[in-house]
Amino acid sequence: MGNTSPKLNPELVYDLFGGIFKPQIIRLALQLDVFTPLAAGSTSAEQVAQSCHCDAIGIKSLLDYLCGLQVLECHGNIYALTPTAATFLVKGRKAYVGDMILHYTDTALFDNIQQSLRSGKPSSLGEDFVQDAWLESYLPWRIPKSLEMWQAAGISTEHRENLRILDIACGCAIKSLALAQATPTVRVTCLDAADVLVVARDLAERMGVESQVAFEPANLLDASLGENQFDAILTGQITHYLTKADNASLFNRVYSALSPNGVLVVDCPMAADKPTETTSFLTLLLWANSGGAAHSFEMYRAWLSDSGFRHIKQLSQRLLVAIK
Image 1 (cartoon, rainbow, N blue to C red):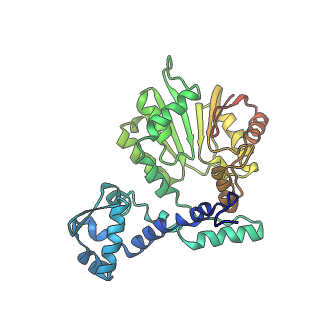
Image 2: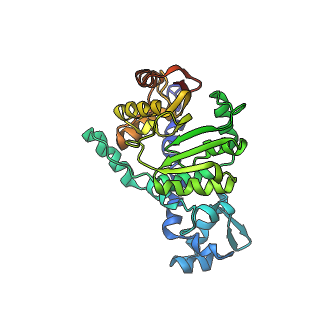
Image 3: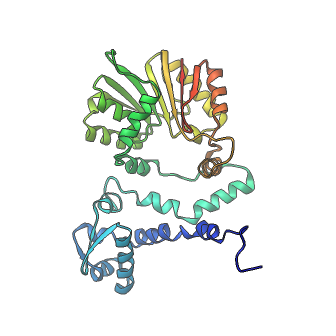
């Protein structure tokens, strides 16, 4: 037998752990707070090291690595923040997401998952939905992709004086705000926690659609959604966080809130017949967090049928529509 075997894949094993280094070094940079000294303007590694109470040679190596990641810029011995770092990685700025990065790279997160695996009981993973919303609100590709989603779902704004949309657990609400921006007759109600709605309001102002949007702070688990109030309702990136009982309750309230022939759009990863890396990861993480899962289309169809929906159709691995 030679040194290699067609049945073995050492590269796969390298891939299993090799990706850990970049996020952990970003964690070090956030813990040392190397971005704040650069927020006042370009400066040297020595000045950053002095501000962070660190060794200058070590900090230079760290800053050079961050330049290699295109997080920082370097001109000779002078370092500067990129626009991305200036927006998201400087403490105190509105769109700072460093706390979210620190949380996801903390071993305590995985200790909680291990505890859930041993006990069989969910253990909240403490996700930062506010900082995640800030990050998503600046993704330019979200707008055209969102318009494609509405088109695929058959949501038409033609020949309508107003199209009333409820965006449940809206986050930054970029999906529904994209439609509002494209069509002035669209009216959006954003429902989420109050601190998350701060991000949605900011994005609505940046997109110039604030006059078309209402903001409703509420807990989706028990929020009253009203009766026959909306022509379309979007649940995006939330139903996989919910248990089976929570989803059944939510879809009953969604059905009541829709007007006759109203459309429900569910935009969320769904389990396939065979496990995939993405959906299996989500199921593991969300089961440990809240008892959720990447639910299958068959499960969604059962919930929606029980609620009274008809014409339930899966359009892709993450998109389905149903008609009241």
